[in-house]
Length: 226
Image (tube, rainbow, N blue to C red; front, side, top):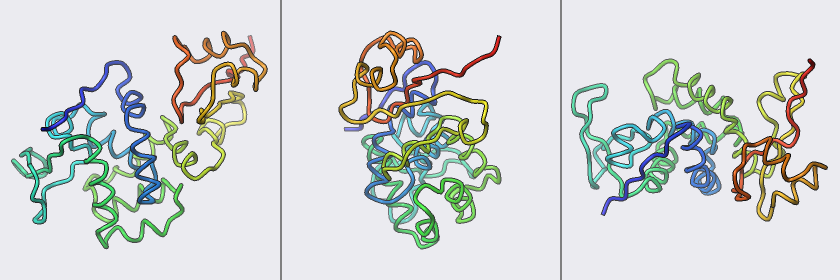
């Protein structure tokens, strides 16, 4: 039986990231593909989970059937009319097949020589290896990664400190952020940064005390001169 996931309303991209970040990090641990790249590709290829292939076939990466595919399939107009695409029982299978697709093909072998957090190198390399025909594909991936700070998930897997894109590109942004780890609570985080739980909830527009691993919390907002 095919399991389809109905996308949530609101910020489509942010919701997609929240829904699939754990899967992307798991795949990174197993197959050494940056979680940031996996998420950005999923967002772009699936239309944040709203595209026909993702909704009807759980295909989040636009992977076509090719000759070796023996599973279910769906037909969809792409470079040519009614091309054959793979159909999966759930999005998790699509994520796993994406990992296998990249690791089992020689044309992508050079990507695995890059640093595990080199998302720019991966974005450029995917295009050069023929994953996509769009000349702007690397820029689209990089833009998504930096806008939604997807590189933080690479850092979590690698155990590295996280710097936000705004902090690395401007000295006037004094925002401080905390990446939620296992065992973190709002009270503990607030105490660590010498703020109240109420302030922490206000900074992040939180309506509950529920946290998820990898969640980014603002613990000191941008200072403004009036």
